[in-house]
Image 1 (cartoon, rainbow, N blue to C red):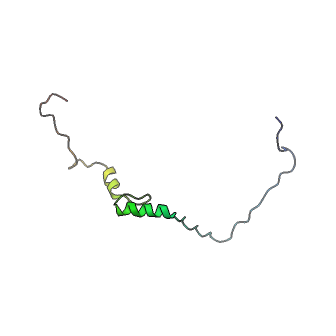
Image 2: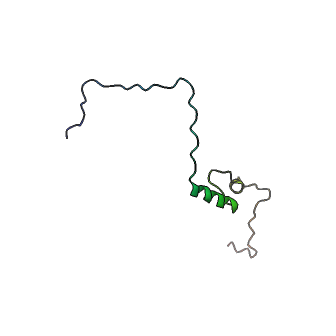
Length: 81
């Protein structure tokens, strides 16, 4: 197979100027209208929204506290099931 470029010869370097001051952050992308309507519908129904804090998930995923969480009832017959 023949290479499509020359491995020998002079290599060109391209220098790109860098701005002197801080670069302002890019504005956040705007949601499309159908996505905005979907988020509004979900919010109106009390559902979790992408990218927003979900207090119920935080509560459910928190480490279990042994001082009063759920308990497993013992088998009343004592047959080990």
